[in-house]
Image (cartoon, rainbow, N blue to C red):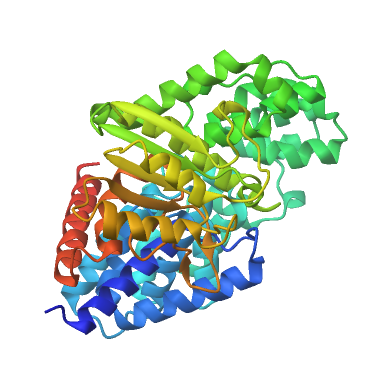
Length: 476
């Protein structure tokens, strides 16, 4: 007999993992940013207070940077009564997660810790070790100046003399720097030519101060752009008349590439159809790796209803996840069929429109008797309401009680009111998805959401993920 407490604990932890994957504290289609942040903050406090060991262990999962930063902050704020062994284990997880996070997120986290007055010895050591491990501290001092400055002051870290001068001395008091990048930054305040040797994010503000035209600036700053900046600015550069910004689309991460595709007009997508399809296919095959073609017959029900627009803060993000999942699932499948809720047949021309007839599409999908059925949707089945849940219930109870078809629902949208992602049916597992690249791991996690695995097995799973996570960090 299943222990009720273990069942509740398992549900709580899976609920938190879903939130940590999908919630970003930004406005969604149905929730504003304040509701999101209040909901997420409550959930973090509840889980760290009741399941601290498992709360820390989620740092080893494929959660987003927003929630990873919140987890690190909560762990560092409440570490007084921990045993040395727990401190060591948490410290390793925190250090490894910080290595994987975007540096601007880490510097922002350190600024928040300073603002909150979190200044225990463990916090200072983590700040010191992460900052010491940065490959180019001079570059960081220029690009993330406010974060570096706050961290050095808060943790009382030693810095090279000229870095200290750069961070803490007003510009008007400095005549010249011997460090080349610092001197370039100083000169860029007075000479336009110097700003094109700076990182894009630093140069952009100075270009505005100098009154430089956007097209001229983008054309000349192109050699300094990162791959992600090239992808983000390519369309803007073309509209402004700058032709030097070209991104290698096939090298981009799959979900980011899907977002780029959706940012293009329908006409441009049609004109570049072969190029975009090739890039999406190559990127998806790279993610699939050795698992390509091993998933048997796969049918995907993909949500392109109007709510897949997301919000102005996360424009078309749910639709981008669905589009990326479509190409990844095709790469993983031996035989693939994709069914969009709108009925469209060309994935590269999808757009958010219409209601969400998930029930009808599920009937179409199950008639094909796939080995795997994957639903990518925010879960708001409304045409007619409740049909999807009833279809799945009848399928599981009457037509496929032995589970010949594996069904999983991937939801890219956090529901602030429910503290979880919205579920389609109690008869199928639902897990949160942030990036299509995480789908193989999320399908593995789905068995805990479905209740087929207990709390003890969840603990073993998280322990195994922690061990692999820390081992990879040590090897790196």
